[in-house]
Image (cartoon, rainbow, N blue to C red; front, side, top):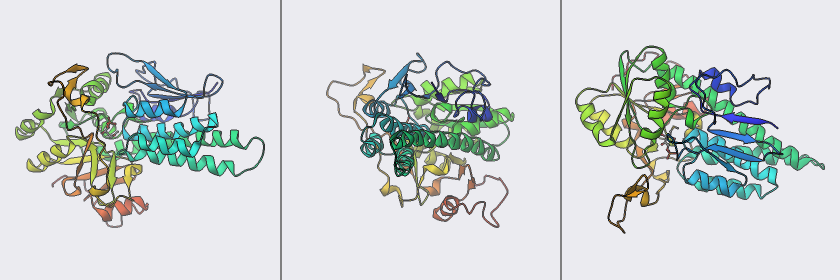
Length: 396
Ligand code: MRU
């Protein structure tokens, strides 16, 4: 049986790259990680034990490391909707493996890809990953023969592994590029969770933060708790603690006075979807941080792979913001905190206009300023631009 493991480790970026490949494969063994937990964020399981996708249940972290095994696409769709598996890059990988799962089961593969994409509407990587695997499946299916379906299912798995390997490489490259933007003795504020739990590598913004820590530049990481589902408190603090980062947790509403007090040198977040004009959709609360950072003259930097840029979305109006159940706001860790029947407003994300984003760190380099022109050049591979500034000063 082959097992392909994605995430969680606080090892090096090279270690992370290896995790996308089966043990004993050409890419190397998976035994070189430091501080691995026993359960990876995502694991593909081949027949006969599978086909299945084994997910570290992120809803139960940090209390328990348990696995949710998805043996059919409806179970994966449910896991995505409940945030068992979450975060833009990992959703792309999960979406691709979901298509591979449907293909292995000889289910309606196109229908499965569509259902996966619908599970969460904002994170662009989810549908992108599912469509990539679907494309690989359909191309392989064109080869006639008795074994065509099995080969096509394998092609979908291979595509999912390719996406994972690309994501690990992108994560390492973002860390390298983004480090140039982090000042010495940096006090970094971050929001939501952007580390190895959401990536085949070390993540997006968190990969940059880890690089800063390894370079001796991180004085402190401020971790927003990230209401209502506490991805910051439950997951980022968990990852920061395991990686030995000097960090402190704060309520989301404490960020304003922290910035006013001059206690933050740079705000670093990830993204779930970036429109062609540079509008950034990310976990709700990000927009507020961007406005605050602007007001206080602090750089607001977004780290995301190019796959998170949706060139089909012209601007913020083209980004659908996921609305989540009222109970996530009216209760806290399962305990009601509002009168029965209270209505709630619970958008999972908000959208920050490009003018508030100081720089966008991608695997191809840093876009600054962030606008339709720089994003277009990033997307078409014309990067770094001729004559682009090479300095890394961060004046707004
Ligand atoms: O609702 P979530 O937990 O999936 O939201 C995740 C985020 O908003 C992350 O900041 C984002 O995916 C960017 S980096 C992984």
